Image (cartoon, rainbow, N blue to C red; front, side, top):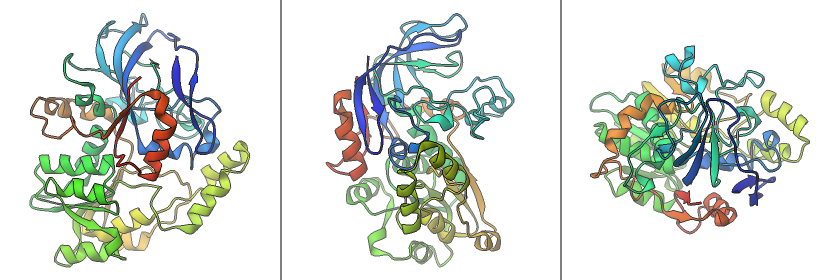
Length: 393
């Protein structure tokens, strides 16, 4: 089959690889009909390269048709149309019973001290082949795949794999009080969807913060107040000015480690990319630092006693945090990978013909797998109006 594969720093290719097969009784094989390109995929060709291997299949946002199921898979049949959550969970362990599927104890990567296996996301998360491919093997298929109706186009349901539950969790964790203000830092796909979810859930005032023109326009088009970073050297001060001097009741950091503003972290990331994998892994897991501009802005811009919800991905092990400020302001801090199955039942009823979250036209580009290398480059450079890309095998 054809698949999008990793070959090094900013080196993504489309290769012919072996077709996946049933390896465990609880596996299923899915013929992929659509698969998203995520901002987190860019981390694999920059920051987390030490944990990648030549030829790794990328992608963690697939959906498609069930082609084969193992003997231990119940509730799923050949021909079913399914969305595949980005994490792999068993559904019956202590953590899954707590609806913390990203911490599943059956697939947890204890050797790396990390959570549940993720599709297409490095040795840190199981080195499981991803879904930017013609077919994907889905472990724990007795629990993970979410069946969706036949009929509507894939875009109606595809974002249930990651974007929708990730944005949904970020808003729930933000816990905006009635009549309160939510600021969302970063208006990429996750941040933009978080603004829509917040509005749907009744948050009265949503402020979106970014520095890309088309992203600011997109948010403003559905009633989000926007703050252009290029016009404000101090984002926290700007948010306080917009909120009677207090700051937002809650702030979502939807940017993560790729935030601008830290030359030291940028140099460190580049330096690690030239080290042998064994040394790079050691440094990343003991001395790794992130660009923390967005997180610091969130902490600065939230009001005293407010909540910071971190949904942007961070990977550093030695990030300096402004603990005095966090303690003094009595900030509540919530974070983590989205627990897809936890939120699926809340979101599915919204994926209806009236499309309240605007999923039908959320993607800006639909391209064949053969164009994946160009798509990765354009997405990283924010060229060609590329906001959300879907690969169509």
